[in-house]
Image 1: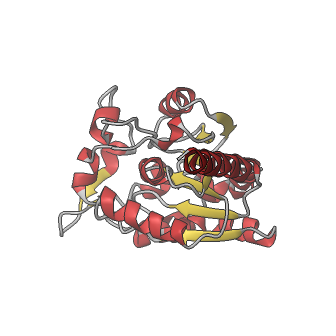
Image 2: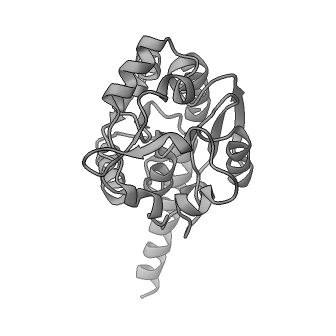
Image 3: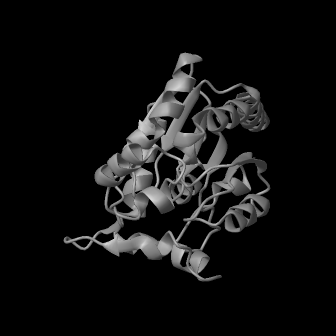
Length: 249
């Protein structure tokens, strides 16, 4: 019996040591999760920068049909990774990475202009703390009942630092979001246990910079501020990529 107990204790210690070593190993994998009123292509510029530096980059095509569906898509991407991974979320994607980020492969979390709810919180609750931003007021239902960002206001409010033609193209390809996403309750907040980084977009008219600073402070993130709109992941892709590289080390 004593020898069996010793073996169990040794095995547990070995697993713990392996986990610690894993946490110290630099990540070469990056999984990017897009936000609402966008699609996976919103990460194209960041992905190209990181891929050119040797990172394996996966852009998750989360469907925005429910939090559970988006988390499932992200977990499928994580399952396909080999080794430590940086998990990155933009806007609504922050809710998704908070849920999926508990995965053992996730070395660190990067929030870009993103919500970072705690367990039990919803977007509705987080947005109720102040008057709606100009961007939030531009969200409306489409003919099928999904929520979209008013295409006419998209260039000025969602992507004010992009060329108008690019902003209009992004508005035209945005995916509708299920209205129920605003009431989806966060069940996991992986930032409690994983190193976190936050990119604050200081000219954001959708998720106010002060709200972003609140999230960054609450999760204890390493913070980088950039002079950008809510589309800062596109307009300042180099800056965002640098933060992801820092999170990988």
